[in-house]
Length: 532
Image (tube, rainbow, N blue to C red):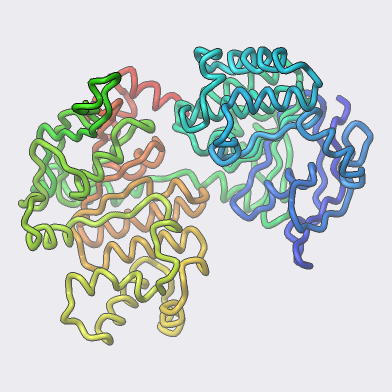
């Protein structure tokens, strides 16, 4: 099999600091190759460097594509190759697509620029590409703007744009990370089908080993800018040789056996919902919208119970109502029906709501956006004490903050802990920031934690560490968790019971082993099978 791309001793540095250290690999014509590693491993920088898309970087080495060195060609020649011979799918289509142009116009623009077709021909070709990638009503969707498409449709539009000029090599940078589990499977099947039909090579950049196992014939493992291992996918995943590869494979979320004994289904309930419904006002079409508004039911009559010391997992795709349910539980959205928390409920009495808010805290999905960049660690973690325990002295508050940081495993040594207090969120890694968010929630000693996708923004090894931390804290403190997640493996590892939601309706509820092993509803079956 001939080499389509041959990379030799590729190095990338910024301001004299090398971040990719002389890596070498090849891609054969028609091959499906995966590049795996955590954030900071250098995989995306390596791919972008091939097309010279990294600003302010010093790049050295060779990247021979069809006999031409991409790293030494004049910029004009590289521009001709980009999009035509080598195309790229970016991780987040919402930021990669132009919000001021319809998706069809953006695809047609590429065809006109690269293929020289007339405007009408380019538009027709763009419609055919949208249809080929599985977007329904392609003629109508041609005129849709990115914000008018779902996440899966935006990703399909990005794929259509990348395939517009029938490239020989497709660079796919985390093409399914921002998608729900069933959509991930659909996009992966689409890429597989298109790759076979067109005979193009694909370099898949990802941290998802399930995706690698399902898609790639060969895999490269990167750690801190070095290739530590590469080989045939099945052989490498079955018998990894490098410790880092073994650590990635072993990072699948695991259930702590001791957590199975934590709490009891017969324990008193700390959260009970009966007929919980959340609606949003929406405009009515035509002149009726001038006089009154309709309503969209986001959560439809949910019934569930959360016993003390246990975890209720809420699973479903985007738009299923999971996060809306969480906001209602937190008293941040109006609702109808019954919702009892620790024997109380949200109302118009500010003093009672304040007491209840101490019992129910939240850990958000993205720790970087949920922590104020202008506040120090001491101010962030101790903020709740200022509201709920204002009588504490500064010294007592500092002691409580230090203890909370120790409880979440940020440091053990007293000197090291005190050194953290004056630092800001941007000085920490993603996993450390999530530990800060957990410490902030726990410092006022709540009974219930709402965990809204608490690990989806983290690398696999860090995800496992945070899940183990949450399991240990639940055991030690008897905490109850309402865990919102689209990740079946996280639900399997953490939850005692699971509630499956689709379009605002609870379609299945029961013990996690029963629901995930023998799902009765067809939607649950799709979610579970897509995660395999």
